[in-house]
Image (tube, rainbow, N blue to C red; front, side):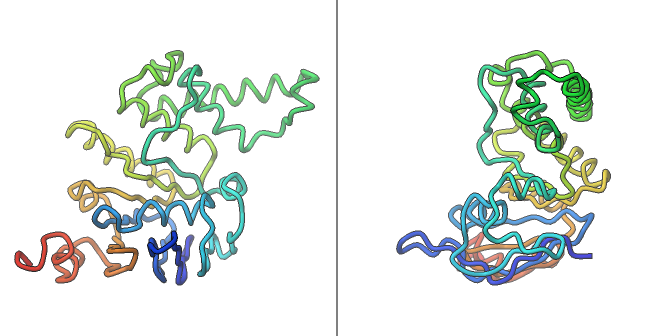
Length: 254
């Protein structure tokens, strides 16, 4: 069953065609990767899918429903969450508080209820705190709950950001370069974690430069070059695709 379908998506910035008529689909329960050289349009594609940019043309359907023109928070409410290429944690908040922000996408209490300090809002806040601790524990960083989020190591900050995305209750998670800046051990741990997330029933779409990570965990891979799709296949087939080899290694080596 297809959970995400992208049809003929295009985005131009002045004279730069960042994404050009890109089409692909993601099957529910799978891990799909988007790869390509620097400047291929990968992060732009993520920003289009998650509502941070508006496409010039094309269509994006999530669970057979058009999400064209929806704001990022509206897309998150539908069950599609993301992390960013560079961590975006709230400064002066603890790791736990950052994760709790993700839970509030699903909370019932609004500004007025919170201001009135109604009893049911206390219960909901306790439930949110307990769930958030559970997500930190799932990622193996529950012991860092009370630490200031921006004082953590880069790898720990990435884990907090991932916990916050999971806290929003997604059915699909978009990970933008989750292994960026990580050492080999942290990258291996990230691969295991992504598989565990998939095993929870959450579909994963990932942009990543680390080819060993991509090849080990992906069911399918989309390859972009200068904003255009040049391949969309299983990892083994992509590895042996002449056009992909040419893009990554150059004309002579290919």
